[in-house]
Length: 151
Ligand SMILES: [Zn+2]
Image (cartoon, rainbow, N blue to C red; front, side, top):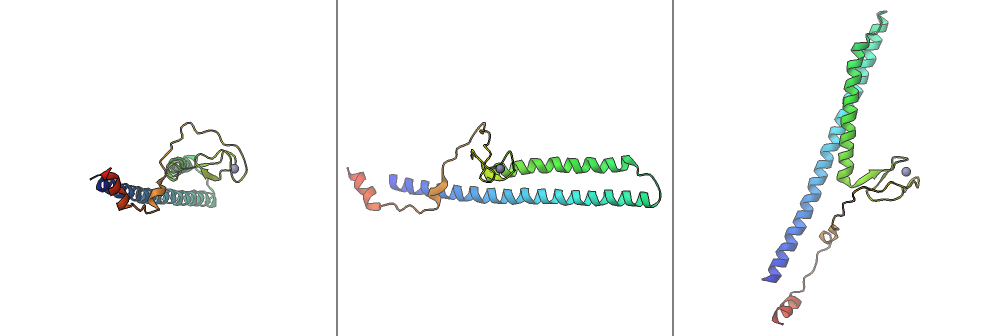
C-alpha cells in the first residue's frame, strides 16, 4: 500500500499548495482594494477640506479650525490603517521595503537591488519549504516501486 499512500500524499500536498496560493492571491486582492478605497476616501476628505476653506474665505469668514481638524483626524486614521494593510500585504507577498529608497525587495535580501543599501537583518526569517515540486509533475516509476517491495 506504500505506493498508493505516497501517491495520495503527493496529490494532497499539491492540492494544498495550489489552495494556499489561491488563498494568498485573493487575500492580496482584498487588501489592495481596501487600501485603494481608503486612499479614495482621503482624496474625498481633502476635497471637502478644500471646499470648506474656499466657502468660508469666499464669504469673508475665518476658517473654523475645529471644522478642519475633524477631517484631519479622519485622514490620519485612514493613513494609519493603510500603513497596517500595506505591512500585511508585504508579509503576504514575502517582501520588504528598502530602508533607504523604499524599493520592494525579497524578504531576506541583504542588499537593495536598486540603491545597494545594506538591509538590516531580519529578526526572524521564516523558511518555508520550496513549493517547486508543485510545478513539475513527478513521474513515479511503478516498476521500480514494485521491485523494491519484493526485496
Ligand atoms: Zn534601496
